[in-house]
Image (cartoon, rainbow, N blue to C red):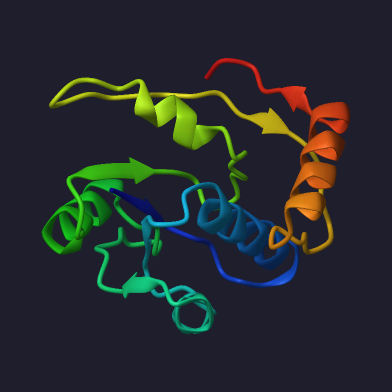
Amino acid sequence: MITIFSIPKDFKGKADISQQNAILSWKKAIPNSEIILCGDDFGVRNICIEHNIKHLPNVKTNDNGTPYLSSAFELVTENASNDILLYVNCDIIFKDDISDTLKYVDAKEFLLCGRRYDVDIDTKLDFISDKSSNEIFKFLDKNSSLHGPG
């Protein structure tokens, strides 16, 4: 199985909507995965409780409060229930086919990277029903653009 982890921003305003949409898409796309949110920004603890997600609040930060990615990786490596770790920015929506992609990995150690599609969404999405998910992904396919390499 897979552990998905991220370091969310404050759950306020548009970031609240985009991050909750992403988390719900992860739960739908890889249903048996473990999800871990790292950090103690506003609302993270409450979102973890609401969605039954593991919370690791003690990420080291710099003087400006920006979390160190290396600290999150260390915490997750120590606390994850699975050997496969998937780091993702907390506003990235997964399509259901990500599980199929992960099935093709046949290596003990590996690094996969992906590119995102950009789309502006300002409402909470319903990933619960298959019909709703299909409509969401049709909308995303039609209204998104591939982000440049970076």
